[in-house]
Image (cartoon, rainbow, N blue to C red; front, top):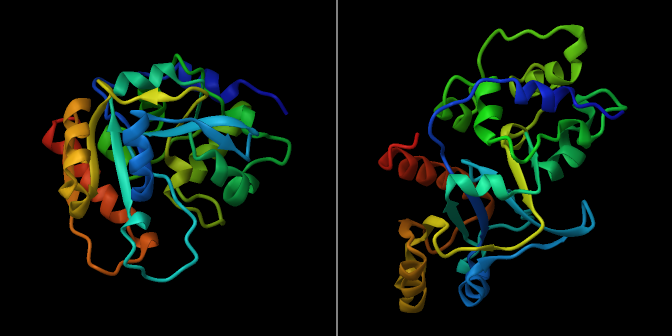
Length: 253
């Protein structure tokens, strides 16, 4: 079922002033390759069978599968890149949710003939308009607090289903990825002049080579405390807190 209902609804929405940037979350073990290449590289995606780089608008929404218990290996800790807001306009595709989780977790929140393409938003439309369509502020988007009481006619069933998804109006249990704007890039993204901050465990910033590269990128290092033994699955909340702190310090949120 092909429809431009959702995209047309977003295009007609109001806009918000400002912006909260993009995020990319990965394992600390990948920092060496990123420092050497100086860019975030598009990798083969098994979902869409092409090379893609995934960024999210404002939120550190990426979830890495982790079936283990606690570890002392810092390579499994999370690092978050916060990138400039205007980079969103270079995306090849924009969706209002995590595409991987769409297929694995909330595909059945929608009518069975509605495919993921029904939620495409033209990349040249700024993510701010997706935020403005369902939230009163960037802060409400960040903490997943949609406007209350929105209603849509029967001709907007796709929009209505998405609204019910992000407001908990469906019986299925979902996580915050259902309300995190995803941007897909078919090309790699150079970091020089694009990265604003890098959030990682304090121990990572003891590396002088990494610090030199962060300085060359023009980024701000932001460390967080990590115990000697930690569970990588539990670091999502820590990243949210640190990203929020950065955005507030910069008067972006």
